Length: 417
Ligand SMILES: Cc1cc2nc3c(=O)[nH]c(=O)nc-3n(C[C@H](O)[C@H](O)[C@H](O)COP(=O)(O)OP(=O)(O)OC[C@H]3O[C@@H](n4cnc5c(N)ncnc54)[C@H](O)[C@@H]3O)c2cc1C
Image (cartoon, rainbow, N blue to C red):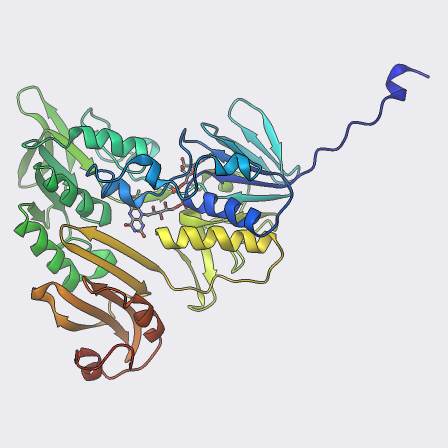
């Protein structure tokens, strides 16, 4: 008998769950798997060289120097090893072989899976392949997506410097507030008439614009940027039809693009993101997608949607774990998000449409109010601004038909409504 014939057959490597991402959704998925008693191997593949962290403070407390990086971690760095999660930082997944159930990593190593979760999130628009604005790659032009981006931007926040922000969405307006707190001169340029126009409509947008102007932000609304140039004497210039705006540094904050490519190349169904059902399973039942990347079917709203918010990343991470653990849970919650800018803090819940009726409760000029959005008399969304501990009540009011006069009358307790 030959030597090889006497050997024990090599033990088959046990397959488990592989998560590609390393952001908030991925972290909550692996955490919920272990909390739920999942005993098979878990591998977390993360491009960034950072233990998973939360991004909201990158434009707020961290950027302002009020929160250290360690406090952004949803789970302590040591938790992953203690829980038997193989955390492969600085590792990029390059392709997925759905037939072989295998992920190939940069450098050609492979990892087999029983279940695969894609949580690759978004990247800033105009980074790399999305370039469609001249000058986006000049030195001194920044985008903000990662901890590393925020560290670089923070170094530039020196009193008296001149920052031009292109884009007046959440990240643009939050950075404007953080930069003003550091004494930076800030100009915000957007083709829209008010900030946050697409996300929140004109009423709240006008309120945010007033707040920023009152805090010294120069607003150039209704102005389209055609490109960014560099002048040997003037430095950076942001080019607009009404003239150049000089800048010491520029932030491009014109949205995010989902990192779909890996899933697309694997042949998964793609819509605005990776298309998944209410259990977050993609067109391949062994592959789930979660967080910013997932276009998921919401059973409460009766339609598919892709949501780029913190709360959704956490909840979908947990839901993917539930699906893998064989529990019959569904994507049934309403979108929720928050922001902090100057002395304004707000929370939004629901699913407003651009042409929904707007009903304000309270005095917007006093800075403390609630906005309801209604469609055919039914509440579709609500937002509390500088009024706290009411968001759960607002959430429970979505879908109800309450007369406008009743909503507006602050003497009617929300709890009673
Ligand atoms: C500056 C900023 C401020 C924000 N503020 C708020 C806020 O105030 N409120 C709110 O509700 N939401 C906010 N958000 C949105 C919120 O942070 C996101 O919705 C959330 O981070 C999404 O989590 P995710 O895990 O899906 O994706 P991400 O957090 O983007 O993580 C995806 C990770 O996958 C990695 N990756 C991508 N491709 C690969 C690959 N091939 N291999 C391995 N790894 C890969 C990426 O490098 C990244 O680390 C903010 C976002 C930013 C950027």
